[in-house]
Length: 424
Ligand code: PA5
Image 1 (cartoon, rainbow, N blue to C red):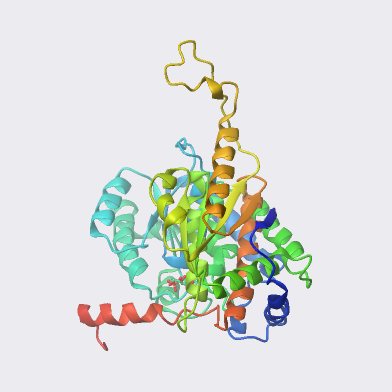
Image 2 (cartoon, rainbow, N blue to C red):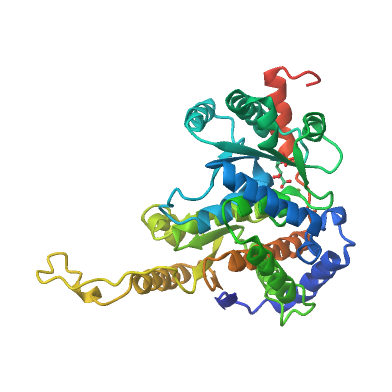
C-alpha cells in the first residue's frame, strides 16, 4: 500500500506533528478516552484460535448444506463483511458458491417480503450478528427468517442452521441462543461494532463466502507492522491523520473517498461508517462522503469541481486490475475511438483518474492518493487496519472519543416513542 500527499499544501503540517504523535501514543498506550474499546489494535496477532477453527468448521458445514447464508446485522455488524464480499465476489458471480444475503440492515417490509419469497426456493442457513443482541432492525429480520427456516426444516434441523454472533455473556440474543442451543461466536467486549470485521462478525460470513480469511488476517497483521510504528516520518497513518486535521482547520470539513473500481463501493460505505460514527460528535468531525468514478463524475463531479470549497479528496487507486481488456481498432472509426486502439481499459481508467485529480486540484480540492496493490483479501485487510489507526489518531486529535456513538441512541428513542415501546 502506498500513500502520497503530493497534492496537498503541507507547509503548515509541522505544527500538527506533535499533536498527532500525542494522539497516536494515547491510542497505543491505551490511556485515552474509549480505551476499553481498543481490543482491535492487537486482535490480528491475538485471535482466539479455538474459535477461529470453529469458524472454518462451521463455514464448511454451511457451504455443504446451503445455497445462501442469510447474514443478519446492521452497522458494524454488517458493513465490513459486505465491503469485502462485494469487492471479492466479482461483478457477475457464478452461483457455485454459498451466497451471502443480507438482512436486518434496514426496516423495509418490501425487502423482507421479497427475501422470504427468494429463500423459499433455496437451501439456507442464518448468521445473526448483534453485539448488543437487542438492535431492532436485525431482531425483526431474525424473527421472520427464523420462522421460515423452522417451517422449512423443522425446529431440530433449523437449530443446526442458525449461527449466532453476539456478546460472550449477555443480551437477548445470547439468552435465546442458550435457550435454543444455537452455535455461538463472540463479539469481543473490547471491540466496537465498526472495528469488528476482524472478529467472528466478519470472519464467519466471509469464510462461508469462500474468502481466504487467513489472507485477510495476514493483511491486518501487515497493517500492524506498517501503522503502529511510533514515528511521524515512517508512519503514513499518523501523517494522514495529521493532514486531515490540518485540512479541517483550514475549512475543509468534508472528505470524499473516491474509487475508480465499482467493486470498492461498499469499502467506501464501511469507511463512511468508521469515520462518521467515530468523529461526528461534540459539534465536530470531518463529514465522510464517497463517489464511484467515473460514474459520479457525471453527477456530483460538478459539485466537487466548482461547488462550495470545503472539501478534500482521498482517491483509492488499485495498482493492478485482476482482469483487463484491450480496445480494438475499428476500420470505419465512426465513433472516433481509434486513438485508443491498442490501449488497455485499465490505462484509460487511470488517465481518467489522473486527469480528474489535476482538474480537482486546480479547482482547490486537495488530493490524497492511496494505492492498494490489488483487490484481494490481504490488501483489503491492510487497508482496513490503516483506516482504523487513522480514525483513532484523527479522532483524538479532534478532541472526541472515537470509540463510542452516543448520538445513535437519539433516533432510537424517538422511534420507540412513536412505536409505543414500553418505557419510552
Ligand atoms: O459501530 C457500532 O458500534 C455500531 O454501528 C453497531 O455496529 C451497530 O449499531 C449494530 O449494533 P449491534 O451489533 O449491537 O446490533
